[in-house]
Length: 121
Figure 1 (cartoon, rainbow, N blue to C red):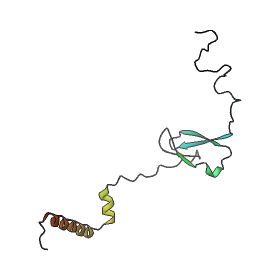
Figure 2 (figure 1 turned 135 degrees about the vertical axis):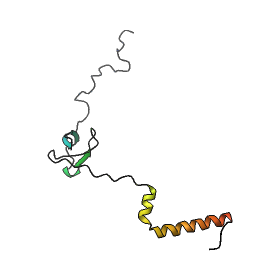
Figure 3 (figure 1 turned 60 degrees about the vertical axis):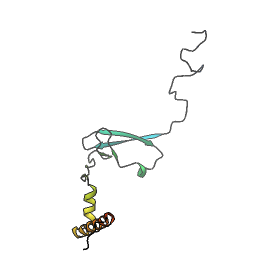
Figure 4 (figure 1 turned 30 degrees about the horizontal axis):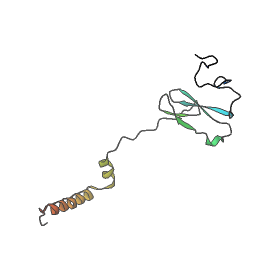
């Protein structure tokens, strides 16, 4: 090591330790606690100048994935999950059996016409 060299490469002469309080502006913050149904607490920090109505009432708990609310005595309930629907299930919601039969017949007629195997009906 050369005389007068720094023990840490790239550091400046007079550079202080990381996180000195006199460097930069630190905004005032408020801590808001959220609880899930299992009793897990999650603390989120928000700007003190943020209006209360802009602070969310519920968040997703990072520890459990469940919804967490600001009221410890009454945490939010888990919403009933809808089962996964297939494309066919959505189609059946929109179409009656008669409409489905008519669409199938029409598609088969078009296919047979393209192939040249159409029959007179």
